Length: 441
Image (cartoon, rainbow, N blue to C red; front, side):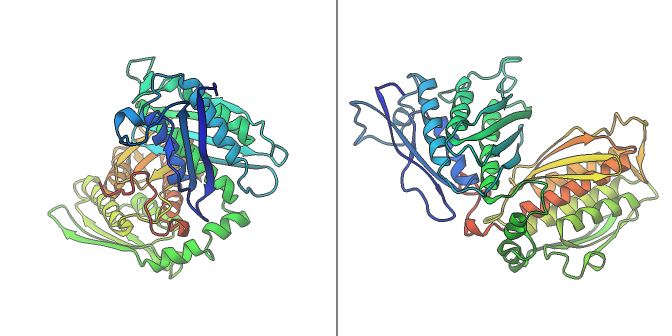
């Protein structure tokens, strides 16, 4: 960094052990907020202070716009690059599992989805990592084909500079790929959160969609502290109601299929495809469920399938409670026949569903998935997500021979992601995984 600026109180501490006592204060407010995602989502105690020589902010309101954004008009490339290098150097000091490791994470926001992949090789402890891929620009679609040049006071063009310097100093190869993103703020936020989550997994030695490793079993498996703590919450949700269209009962327990997968999952809606979809989801989520519906199928499948999905979403939201202490985010892949689908989920309390499933454009021009109309399959997914108050991105990686295959691959991926999102992370000690501190507002 140029001589007129200095960095101090630069720390990256594994907060599973302790927490940094210092603030994040770079002089660029939105940049501070993004770095803070490492605290919430990587569980890394991060701090860094940027100071201009001869400047004295003592006695000033540290939360005022003028102080927080005091360097907005300075050379942001130098500031953000230097902060990236300093934090990368500290990240390189953290303890990682032995051997070459790769971690991938996708972070879902309601208007963005960014994928981060990190690779840490055993021989690059002295730094020298690379920003292998970076496709975040344009930052949103306003204006069209250009996106935002500035968010708050931070110039978006220097996000790449930051991550490039983090990679070089940390010895990690970093890839950041925008899968979707119409909102510039959320594109950047999704990138920082995806990086943070991938980093946490890299430190833990875990990875999304790798459920066979010793590290995964130790952290999330059925003998882990997470699994035991999750069961101890005794979470459940129940809804029973009758209308002129349906009589319905849905009762779930997040109890790890206590009676075994067959006896713990009892679903009878009168629609075989719905029964199969809900059963696969529940078994993958390791939750017990009783779901019964007596609906007006003599009319069509609309009311029955819709009400089952709404009720299931509502009882899930009840079972989640405040979501404090939960892992909150995960991405998982499901395969069924030729279909391969990835579900990225966030128990965000901000309901949103985005997908690219080949439903209206399915190659066989099918109208039904089994005995469920395809337009209702689409509506079932939407109703489930919206009523569980989750943010969900569904990405079709391989098209199934039939829409039924796609539906079941989606149910499988959804259940896997749900199980991981709802798992307790004991290191959070009951605190919410959010820089805001709560998901209730």
